[in-house]
Image (cartoon, rainbow, N blue to C red):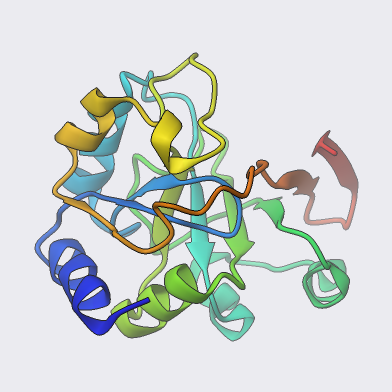
Length: 188
């Protein structure tokens, strides 16, 4: 990870741009999760129907209350004990781009421990959209070289870090957490 790469990604996000970046799971398309126009661009790049949701990537659980109106107590335990990437869908999102929030008011949030994305989010001081770097309905690329050129050309900045990493990535587990603490497994 180098400073120039981080600075370029950060500047792109601050301008409302879209980046292609490594996460704790698969390579993702990312933007400012509070910027409605930037979120719309990701829907356009992916050719994704706007009623389909995307998740938010954060690095500091202490900020969760800023983006979720009421965090069930069990969420804090899940965040603390998980050892693998875990996306939790919460009811009643707030302070995020309206077109990012599900029709039912929910939002999926994951806390990254991956070095680049965590440092980028820490410096940006806002959550990032994180959605797989593929066209809607197509196979999720497991490594950078599998990402379609059309995706790479559509973004404003492609992060250099980990492009040559041969590690096969997998998407996160997904749990839906109701305000009453009810837990539904969406993807194990």
